[in-house]
Length: 179
Ligand SMILES: [Zn+2]
Image: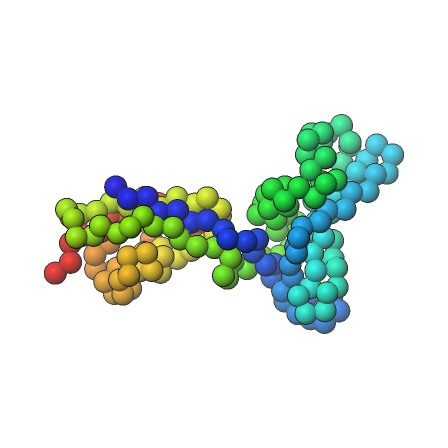
């Protein structure tokens, strides 16, 4: 069995419309939070910047959250702009839903494959793991990973996942021998 790993190479951009210039793309840049304390309540935002005009907007991470409800380590992470926390909040589907943006993964990920040994015993089973929730189309990923055409993929791949439906969850497939 071979293992493939999908992982990010940088943070994805955000498809988010700028209210100033109408651009549809924003970035977290280095990744900065803003924390505002109001008595015992906290607001936490993740700052993003329009890639065309640099306008900054705030994505709500916590809104009027009781200080005690936040893990002190997490709160510290917000205050020091911990890069791991920036990534985990940005990739949290809840943040995207609440702030109405989608992630743009173009050029922000890669597929790691061990050296192919496809001349060995058939069939070969491949396990695809997702280290980050990058949405991929299995047929394209498999074609890329094996250096096959997409027609060959459709002919030679067996598995119980829909090959044309985008997924970001791990899956397994079997490559059958060629002609
Ligand atoms: Zn803009």
